[in-house]
Image (cartoon, rainbow, N blue to C red; front, side, top):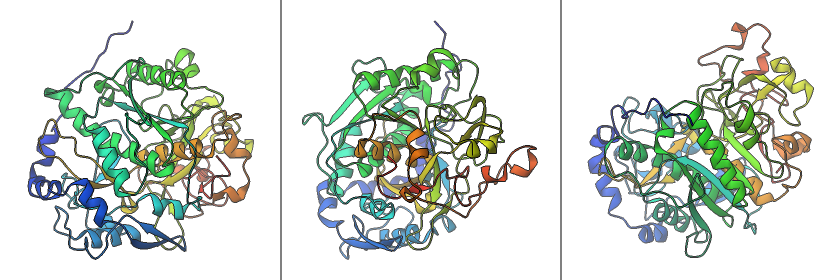
Length: 472
C-alpha cells in the first residue's frame, strides 16, 4: 500500500483570504433562503436570441448589494454582457480543482458575495443550450470531491429552492452522501489545515452540485468524498482514490460521474487499475480539462486525458451574440494514448493521432459565470452567500447532468456517442483562442486547431456546446 506523501497545510488559508469580506458576508447571511426564494424570481434575460426567466433580480432585489458595493442587478448585467472581469478578478477555489471564483476587485482575493444570485441560473443555461423546459429523469449523477462539505445539504436546498427546482434531500431519497470506499462520509475536519482546505473545496463542491442540479433538476445526486488531502496532493495515491471513488459511483448505479479536478498524468494512473476504473461502458464519466489554456501538446491533465473519459472544455457565453472559446479552457494532447473512444482520425490528427482534448464544452468563463450558493466556513468563521464562479469545473458537472437527463447511456463508451451525433446537436464555436500561456506554433507537429476555435472540432471547445439533448 502506498504511503501518503506531501500532506501539508494550505498556505495563506481561507481565514486570511476572507478577512476583508466580513461586512459583506455578514449582511448577505442575514437573508434566509426562504426569503431569497420569494424575491428572486422573474428577471428576463435574452441568451442566444431566446428569452429565459431566471432566478435573478426583480425590482425587490435590485437594491441588494454585494460585498463590493455594487448592486446585484449591475453584476447580473455584467455577466450577461461578458464584462464582469473588467472590474473584478478571479482566484482558484482550491489548489487542484478547476474552479475560478470571481473576486471583489481585479487584485483582491476576497470572493465576490451577494445576498441574491448575480450569475447565470438554470433557466439561462437551458435557453442557451436549447434544452427542453422540463426534465423527467431520475437517473443518478455522481460528483466526486475532496473532503467533506458540512453544509452541502443546506446549501443545495437553498440553491434549488431559489430557482424553483424540486427538493433533493436525503429524506426523500434524492441526495446521498458517501465516502469513496462506499461507506458513510467521515465527519468534516474541525480545525487546522483540513478544515481550511475543506472550506476552500466547498466552493468546488457547491459549484458541482448546483451545476448538476441546473442540468437535470429531477435527477438524483450522489456526492462521494475522497480524503481532503486529495484537494492539494498531486500524486498516485490521490488519483487512486479518485479511481476507487468512480468504482463506488458505479456500484451505486450512477448514470454519469463528474470530476472537476486535474492531476499530473503518469505511468501509474494511465495504466492498470486506475485506467480500468475509468473505462465503463454505459456510464458517462466527464472531467474538466483545466483552466490554463493549451497545455503544450504532450500531456493533458488526468483524468480528462483518458480515452474513456469525456473531456469538458469551456466557452464564453454572453447573453447576446455568439459564444466563443474561453481563453483559458484546457486543451491539448495525451501522447500516452491513441485517439479517444470514438474520436475520428481527422480530429485525432491534431495530436499526431493521439488523444486530443476537449470533446465538448459548456460555459466556463467567470466573466459569464454561474450563480453558486455556498456558506461552509469552518476555518474562517465567515460564511459566504451567492457567488459567481467559472472554470471548466462548471462545464464538467453540467455536461454530466445532461448525460443523466437524456438517458441514452447503453452504448456510451467515453466520448464515442458525441462523435456519432449529428452536427446539429451542437452549436459549433468558431472563434476564440486559448494561447495565453502556450502557443501552438511553438510546438512542431501540433495543429493550430488545438488552440484556436474554428469550424468543426477544435481543442478549446471540442465539438462545440450542446444544442438540445440529442448528443447525450
